Image (cartoon, rainbow, N blue to C red; front, side):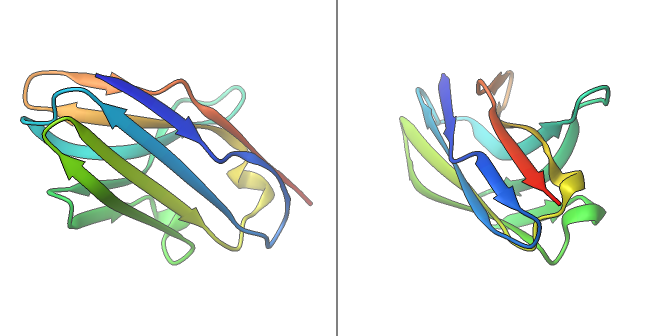
Length: 117
């Protein structure tokens, strides 16, 4: 399974960005997909996850501002998005997508999001 994330960039506080992640490979045992982020000097943290293409959960810090969604789910392809609104400087981090299958997990390469004040 390979994951390719894109959509990061530099934006002013209050602005918006949309991240995309395409997963290719066997999706037959896919359980969930998620976005994580890691800021300099901090541990990687869960931002948002989507399970079964419908169930979602979010970090408290992004609730009401970020939305995760999924489409193009087939036996060998899946795609998720992270719509990020009302961005804050503390959202600055490298964002990673993750695919969780029944017996293993896969990570994308990360995309940088920088929010200026």
